[in-house]
Image (spheres, helix red, strand yellow):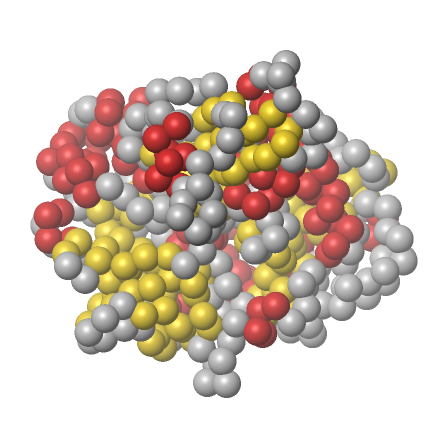
Amino acid sequence: MAVLASAFGDALALHADRIALSDPDHLLTYRDLDRLAEEAGRWPAALAGAGGVVRAGIQAPNSAAYVVALLAMLRQGVVPFLIDGALGPEEVASIADQCSLDLLVHEADREPAQGTAAGALGAILELRVTALRRDGRRHALRPDTEVCRFTSGSTGHPHCIEFSGSAVSQAAVNWAAGTGLRSDDRIACFAALSNGLAFNTSLLAAFHVGASLHLTRGLPTGAHVSRVLERTAATWLVGFPALYEAAVRRGLDRSVFDRVRIAISSGAPLRPETRAAFTELTGVRISNYYGVAETGPLTFDPHPGAAAADDGADGAALGTLLPGVVMEAGGEAPAEIRVRSASMGSGYLNAPGLFEARVGADGLYRTGDHGVLRGRELFLTGRTSRMINFGGRKVDPVEVGNVLRLLPAVRDAVVFEVTDRHGSPAVAAAVVAEPGLDVPALRAHCRTSLAEYKVPGFFRLVDEIPANAIGKPSLDGLRRLVGADDHG
């Protein structure tokens, strides 16, 4: 039996009568989850003749059905490809082609542009299965690959990271050991399961120790957060900075946080003032977590100090190394963070050689981030990547700029990061265009090719792109042109 099918199977059997999973519509014990995964595993005839290992993309919001589908795939030896739910049909079609997907599991109202409907997943009917048209190519998977996830590459195309079953299993085991996750914990997860924050901290890790995972979907507004915490009596809170910003703005009742002992933020830097305000409001200190899509979780701080002391001259304090992590970074001065972990990916399926080029002879992966390592404690000082990172998603400015320049009336465009009125990262674009082209047209054009989260929230039509002394676009000048209150 494959590693992950065995690991999940052991958990389901060991904790059979405990609550395993909930969403707004379902409450499942481990025994229930086992039964539903067995029913969903009676795959439709679409699998016949697929040839080799079947590859199934899954694109759906957080739900019990998502987890059931994932477990059913693993049991049947199907390799799941976890696709961001925000990606549009063209982007999903590109992934399906690049990765030679056979099936797509999706919501009923999100039928892919091409394919043949192949039924529903057992007793949980929210998700459908579509058999995709194959063109005869088969991009070879590594023999031990059991799960594939995606990250944004330097060209803007999602890179498909292959993970062995052992790497995913070790991520769960080491996360539980390094964070003190317990069987009586209840995790309220606001991050999408396709994202590393949720996948590594809130799925197999919870099942490994017999904890319960409570999934939610939708924007993490203050009212939404409050309802979920009351419904689940959560002891862990997992989300991106936007969740904590919303909680602070709403001024939630402190009592809904009475049971929360761990709150985790990741995906983008959390402003110190938000961290301090959240702790003052709730009595809960936010634990930093650092991970890279290609390597899994790397650091965690289960006992964060006072908010004012979290960050210092060395940079943002991101906790101590998790078990199974070997890291090199700066000592006296910041340097690029290089890392090897027990949960590291094997390579990019759709970009051969690119992953390997970032791994040195010593097996350490170059993250592109800069930091300082004090003993086993990491301080992040900066990023070498131009990626705009917010809400756990990455936007490549080059990709968005290229889409804008496809419009004949656009003479030039520069895409860059700004801070919105709440202090959160946002995507902005300065565009030089022929007369008559307006912002609504630019936004509509972007939506035809890009996921909604990649569409700039701020546009500014300009006569020319401001440049610095060596002729490159001046980011300071661009940011002065685009104010946080100017939504185009």
